[in-house]
Length: 325
Image (tube, rainbow, N blue to C red; front, side, top):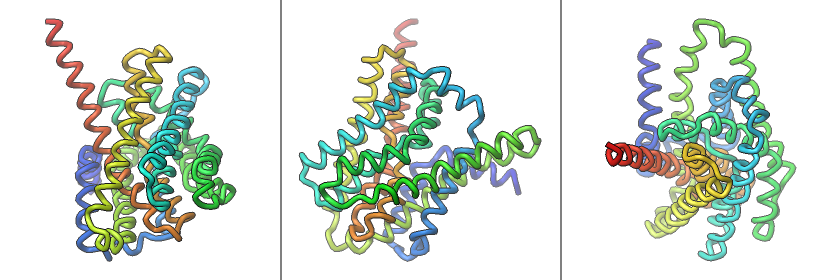
């Protein structure tokens, strides 16, 4: 039974994007499948995702914050300057509806995504730097996300900064901390690597549930307003994500990072924790249900685009190797 679950976990880790897209499409045609993913349930599911992240982190990963402070500082600054700034620019240039604007801004103000570490590994980036950036942005998120939302979205809607701080603390820092503690206490046990091998599958399945819940929530609005709403929102998400990759690479170039670190900072900046954005949108902007739509699209698209970008980097390496022969 365990071997079957491990195989399923590896498959889900490999085919994250098509699996999430499939869940989104199925939910669109059968919207009541994920009606149960609401409120507290949605928050608990995100907590599970963050717990799986914590279970893969070790004390060595956190030492990076002290051993490479300049790298992490540049990465964190790029994360919390570029993505909120680009989101604010797009919202005002495209004159988005308030609800959609809130969603894009929220995605921009959230920390880096968990799967960015995998993408960094796939494209021969600096994995240690990637983990350090993810840790730093996640730790800073309870303060930075509410603060940045107040700055960028305060004129659209009143931001409950204290409530958002508390919510992020509960659904990110505490689960990650518990996971790290369990890893520290039980990592020497023979059964622990088996448990860790199941984490990718649990994380992907949980993220799919969150996306399914969002699709069921906005289903009626999507049907009423047609494909135009989806394509318009996707176009903004695409621009936001792509500019994040480009400007992240630019920040690494200005900091005189090597190629591996530039690849990592590009992916870390461009890929956001859209699952967290989805939960925050549903919790704090319930009066604007369409705010979750950009977050849900980002959940799926960031995984797809990250895989594409990693593939482009690898293709460049192969071409360079062939030219050198």
